[in-house]
Image (cartoon, rainbow, N blue to C red; front, side):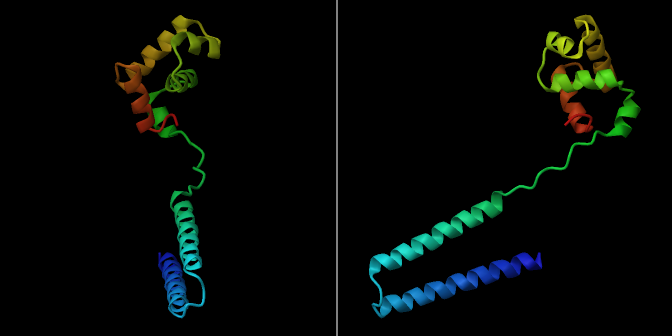
Length: 137
C-alpha cells in the first residue's frame, strides 16, 4: 500500500511541476498558446489512458478447483457432476444425453438424483446451489 501511495505522490508531483513550468513558459510568452493547450491535452490524454489501464487491468483468474469435501458429503457421482456441468452450460436433456452418450431417461434420472441431493426443485436452483458450494465453475 505504501508503494502505491508513494508512486501516485510522485506522479502528482511531476504533474504539478510540469504544469508550473508550462505556466511560467506561458507567462513569458516563450511558446504559442496553441502549443500550451496541445501539451496539456496530450498530458491529460496519456494520463487518462494510463490510469484507465491500471484500474481495469485484471490478472488471469486461478484455475477452478472443485470443492471435493462438498462433493463427498453430498455423495455426487462423477456422471452426476458431468450432468450438472452440462446443466450449467444451458444444455437440454437431449443435448446432455447426446454429449455424454447416455439415454435421455438416464439423464432424467441423474437430474432427479441431483435435485434430491442438492435439496432443490428446479434447474436454476441446482446450478445456483452448485456454484455456491463451488461444485462447478
